[in-house]
Length: 321
Image 1 (cartoon, rainbow, N blue to C red):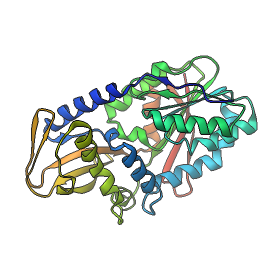
Image 2: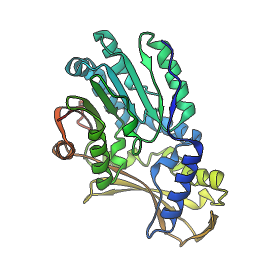
Image 3: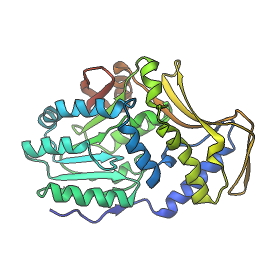
């Protein structure tokens, strides 16, 4: 069955407006910050794929090992008709679930949601070709804004993998999970991937690899702003910094000005003192009891919690109450 035409709820002008708003808000704040979604132009996506293959970057391998072991069990427990993936990208790990549901039978529709039209078109066409009995319906949207556009009817499983939920601040996470629950019916399912709290000696190198790929990925946000908004940042004037915050139990990625920096962007004259930092990402790490509590507060019950052999990464299967 061929892929349906994409449903587009996020146009290029929407992305441009959102980028301008974020840059204006973040670069005039004290301390300065930018949201991590602006890493991901074509080059940023390539760099992130490279990061996932680095020896230091354990989350992708650990999560995949859980799905390899548990995909059949997930298919049996949920028995859903529709599989929805948020922030789908290439849907590589989700193919493990699609394979399991295909073996079980009964899955009719796969709905990947992503902000990138080109990436989504490519992945939906490929998945439709590889799973000929499946209806594939791509949604171009932002998972923080367009959950109300998810398809209704039939039992559904929403998949949110990669630990991406850790990029949301606690209040944002609560809002996202509440919106997720509001978009589902009682008995629908959520499969959530979360990186777990562990020794910082394991966590920090995953965000500060020896080859410097993550540093290039971090600086890419400035290249995106230069290209899209006509700014004149010198990315090489900034050093990549990855710090563990033991109180909040999260990693912060920052860009640190190595000398005084001045740049024009929009109508702003942006100045960095030597040593001043720009926060570009928060990546929260979780404890199983904390995950269950956040899900419970949003109206879900955690039914299963699985982890890899090293206890590095968690995958929670929760049901909407």
